[in-house]
Image (cartoon, rainbow, N blue to C red; front, side, top):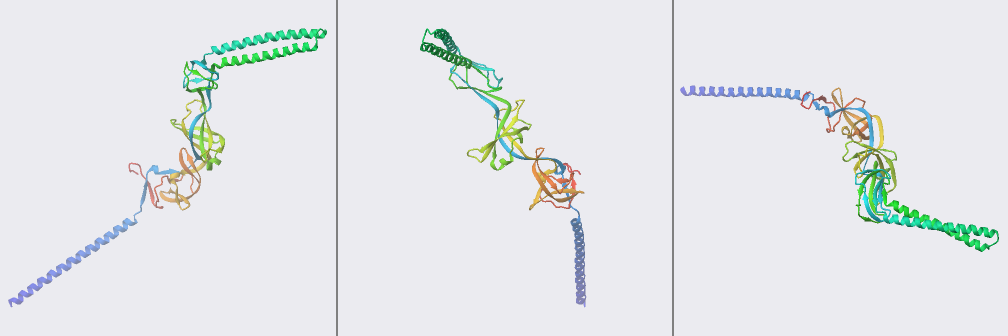
Length: 387
């Protein structure tokens, strides 16, 4: 009897334990289901929440009308449009050099003097020879006139008169020759004083007082800086875009401001050994700030349009052959297909002309930030992160 009672007690305890486990599993399952449902609801909320694109003010720009210029890049060194090499015209010893590099000179100003004593002596010799020739001419003239009177009275023959007449003609030729020799001697004396051929500045000096020089020695160089010229090679494929009178904007090394010039000449043939043609850009330089030898980079205005809609070149994106920009309308990002025109520069920045697809005042993303998702809301923030 006692064994049967013990059996039933153990059986009841086992059943109670099994029921407790079932109830605990069911409770855990219900909690998991509730959590899953909650998680599902939260995930749905996140998925349906609207996304927002944030931009800095510098990322956005307004479409405005401006001038656009299509430019052709050129480069070259500046040189003086008017320059002269001063050379010796006669041989001799240099007595004075009156100028140095960098000095301004006027046309006709004395630059150098040579010892002229030898040439002055030759000049006086030529002057004496002229006086002697003139004396002989006077004697021949009197003899001719006397013989003419005698011939009229038939006191002498015609041959005698002709001889005196020929002597007179020879005397005249001797005078002319003496005059020429005197002119040569006078010019040699004048050439011992060397003057500036043009107004400008001394760019080089290769002679010192006391040196002995020969004719045609190069002594000084004079450059006129009031007008400069840049010799720039133009590729043959671009030469048809270059015309005389075209405006050129130059950036000269060492000069902060842009300098304006014009195409003055175009070489009719290509440069030997290259596929380029030289164009010559004339640059006014009235205040002589620029110097010969400075290197310049030029922007030749090939085509220009005024008052057209332009956008920064960085704002342009392409899908195949279709150009588009990202515009912001009612704080929503839109992809706007556009048609483009002239490409060039405006106020020093690369721009593209927009012929259709945008209106004045439209706000666009000016930087290429890659592909963006159209239709998203847009919010502008400051650099500190505040709206």
